[in-house]
Image (cartoon, rainbow, N blue to C red):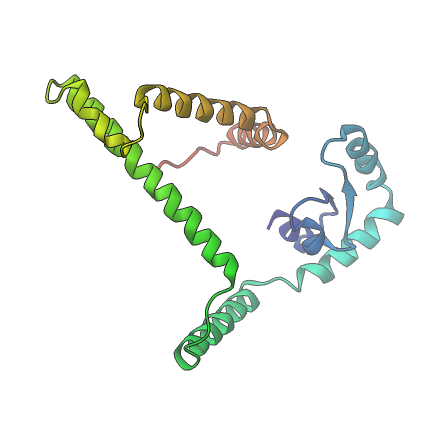
Length: 192
């Protein structure tokens, strides 16, 4: 969205080649490697030159006209209607096999979440004096020698490692910079 929004108001775009940005920006942007600050600096200087900037702005206007909410809503409606029609009339129609994989992964996660919730509930009851440590063991689904405390510690450690890795990512650093910039303009985070 920011790429299209910038193009729609005549702002030349410098962006990365990741995700769908190349599909959205097409030939109406200058591209940089996401891990190359010097390339970004060079492109930001280049884009100041009228012979580079002006064609990008013109192509950006043209490109931004391809994207609008009405067209997106129409495409979504057509896709939903087509899918409903196929499901109603062609009983042999089934979603692609990738959906089956997604459903299996969702089921696995749901089962793991239920097991974890049962463990937490049992630990809370144990702390409250409601059950003994031996009564907690059946929650492990009968796995011999299963140590639920060690497993919970391992899961917590993995979660912390994932959060730490996320915070070290370029995206997270960019996010923090954008939030700081927004705060400097008086924007505040809305809490649900």
